[in-house]
Image 1 (tube, rainbow, N blue to C red):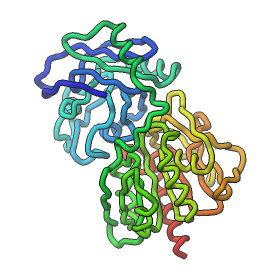
Image 2 (cartoon, rainbow, N blue to C red; image 1 turned 60 degrees about the vertical axis):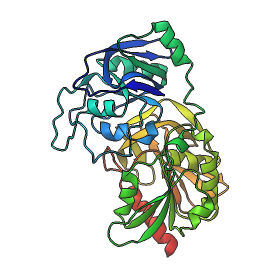
Image 3 (cartoon, rainbow, N blue to C red; image 1 turned 135 degrees about the horizontal axis):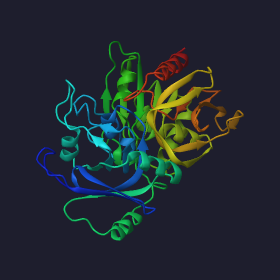
Image 4 (cartoon, helix red, strand yellow; image 1 turned 30 degrees about the vertical axis):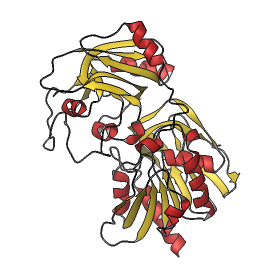
Length: 384
């Protein structure tokens, strides 16, 4: 939840701001972006670049993002790199905001865009100390408060502690499209895919379109009848925010897709949905994986990829064996080399797989782009 006052970044004077964590730790700094107050789960992202894609990623709904890179805003804000129609983060925490953006595509500064969209932030924070605190204590509820008059620390802490937890939060419907839309294939159309929007990023259907796929993006509440009215060659489940334990509707839809043996691909939240559909549990990570430099091993090839992540929950599936499920044999296909978290699942007896990270590389490395080609191969195999 955010309340703010607006005004251009260049004309507003420097105002005090404070970041309050639910465990009582307080960081003081200067107002950045809109002036006001906001609440969310404090998390940190380790990406050195790509802040615009991070801020507009719907998976960050209801989160206050801490940028671990010391200087943010150098490239300003352009109108091409948004991953959705708005900024989704609840708040933004930076150490040293760039005074002047310097990029030929920049239309305005990051600060001005935060002001325009009413996103409350804080600068001048020791983000190194803050990140270490979150690594040790875990992601937690927080609030950012800025302005001429700020309430007492005790009052602000009480307000933070009254906010809802991320565990148990159902958020995917509030970020998903309300109306279906189509992203046409680039060049010759080869396949039709029904993409379930649980918080999809704009680059994801674009990557499929580059491979000759006509992508029909459907609301999170889409029914099986609506999906199969498209006569799809494959079904895709997107990334998204919140606790996958709340996503009973998408799990039921995926179960029907699996029963029909339609080629299936899921990423991030979609990976957790597949885990649940196969009978595995999910759990909340201590501080999650967020950034564009996470090492993951594709266990099917042995290759190690540098990948882009944004997830605070994970699938609880065994790493050391093939599991028997209602839909045949399943195994963990990808694993994070930092902490052995499940980063991918695949079925061995039908065409379905998923990964926990973001292969569309917006922002991030392109090591995982082959996963879209793997999806194409599944659809080709099903046709044959």
